[in-house]
Image (tube, rainbow, N blue to C red; front, side, top):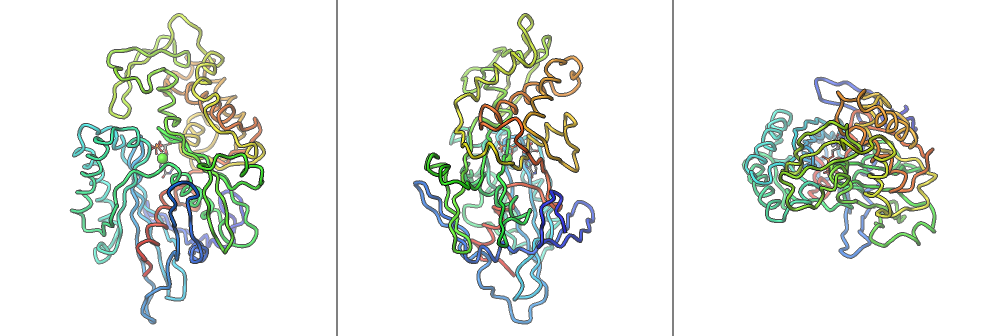
Length: 449
Ligand SMILES: O=c1[nH]cnc2c1ncn2[C@@H]1O[C@H](COP(=O)(O)OP(=O)(O)O)[C@@H](O)[C@H]1O
Ligand SMILES: [Ca+2]
């Protein structure tokens, strides 16, 4: 069978039935096979070993029947909080567990918007947890782990405010009927975000099993941070890459080294603030931030990370793609590492790359699609040079598309014709770091059947 992205996915059984929002697609977790001899070592300063004995020798009674188990992973992102409830089925002790489906729900804004009201923030998590209470059968509640990992929104808050939020969430978890592991509520390191998303995408597209692996690189554009992750093919790349961008990864007795980096403050919404000159400014109250990427007459307010910003167009100055590009260029130029190797590669791109491509009809919301980097530039020009025509869409559409163009070309150094596979779901499973994180969670708890 063919996966939605056209890769041969020889281990997918694509018989899907989808009652309600429950997405069923039966993906035998061959990854488990890989991970049974897999260890994951961060090559930089604080070494850690992951994925050792993923799904360890199982402890099911010999005559055990098909067994279902669940994993609940919260993604506390800068723009929203999401719950991913994964269902796994182990048909018999000899068989590997299969990923059967995912239930996904989300709320906006993200936890960081409740920086001064941590209880209210935790209330949003509680509402999402009610979805899990409905989805997981009561007799499995106690065996089902629940974990929340926060990303860039909380990384940007003061330690005190972030901890207050995490504490409240932890209380919500403790009051729930689920299994609450130690360290169940935390801020995730940015490099894990990239690695786990890479594992998710390469697992879902079937690249982590079999002989001829052609892994794909991943690009995630969040609200506050952005990640790039790929498996370098050339020795040169490894030599010229700073050590903290590389992570060792062992599988089938081979060592792989992933290139990964998370750029804090380079997510789409943080970039808006940087372009407006409002990022990292202490007293923003009352101050007006103007940009040539915005409609001339525009004056409005915007809330991000619990702060209110006033922003508007340049009434007198020039507007349009050219001046906007120059403005946005300052945000990225010379700030990112540019590995030569990626110029000729294609990448999977999701989150805001996907959303903005959908907003401007570059791709279909359900299907996704393949774009070249220059398609974003073409669209940016079209929108920025005709801002009145796009007035009803977000006032930031011109700035967002221009930023994406500048980030890809001048930031990472991609070519105009670099191919991007825009993907939201593969076989009905969200392309999110949360699946990779759930594999790790189940492995660390020794949960199979
Ligand atoms: O499970 C998911 N599937 C697809 N896109 C997702 C998922 N979770 C978040 N996103 C996308 O991520 C973007 C928001 O980024 P986020 O709020 O996670 O910021 P951050 O990663 O900088 O903390 C949006 O484009 C949103 O659609
Ligand atoms: Ca994210």
